[in-house]
Length: 374
Image (cartoon, rainbow, N blue to C red; front, top):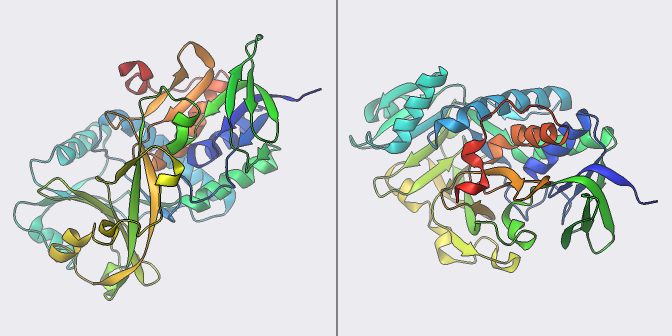
């Protein structure tokens, strides 16, 4: 007789890995499926690190989620005995009129999150490698920092395995079909599985399974630069950062470790519709020059490109998440459209999936993330 799972998770990267663990903690019989062996470099979770901010420039609706996510990341570090979160602080720099900074301050006030305002001169005094003209100011959040992304996913998968979660990797899902009794049949090249409920957390390639979702995938790159100045390092107190230039280009980065500093550009990229289009770093000449405006005019202490990587964003039209059920089928949850700022939420999004599958309360207002807004 075919085994019937309480919950099958399709896509076991960041959110899926968390969902599998928390669902097993809730006592559910769980199946985890992925087209590759996670953590891997075919989605959006690789590249070592991801920033986590609590005051949130993308909207106050995210703050309760990210505060809960932080607590779960801390618990994961304790449970796994791994270094997951590094509290380096986050420096956000933009024009004083920036909508992003305005929302950061508003969310910090509403949720009593520590946030310090800095002039361009004060930024340079504290972090001499930063150089900004008077049209810029900064906000420093001391409680922010970064997460070790692949370490976190590995920790979730290991803990799930110890809870007897069935993990079937290197099995891309080709079809999701509802059966007459309401259960779901999930077909891979190897076999067909059956589950009472399904969570689709496939990230970039969600439209291969659910083609009607309002998602555009975008190829993105990030870079590691050699460092010549110890003041850029985590050990010296250099923080994670986001910088919005006067032309609207936005950069993010991390304190330097092991002789390099990682920096990426948040906007831009190449729209893609197929995995073959997500080509490696260096496939476009601009890959080598995306960070030039930041390094040429604002940040000193680097000594040329060390290496780069490519990943992808799954963008919604408004760049806000989709956290919902499939229309007309509450046995299928979807978490997608994380739009390049979702990893920090993976822990709590996974817990939300697990709680919904176990018919437990989620305690969050998720109406801003419903699919029917489009």
